[in-house]
Image (cartoon, rainbow, N blue to C red):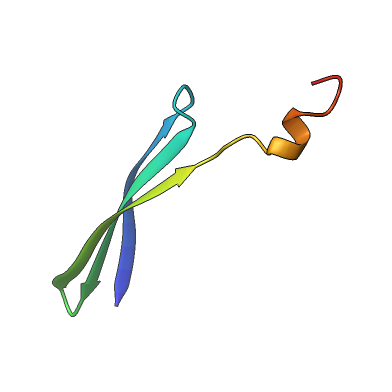
Length: 51
């Protein structure tokens, strides 16, 4: 079984990254997915003075 990720797209303005994932077994495509990672501000840190 092999897994590969397609082009990684990073969108700094929307604070997210996306990667296409394809899984093959014995030369046949078994699964396709899009991995989405979104980062957010930690509310505790955002409310600290000096930020």
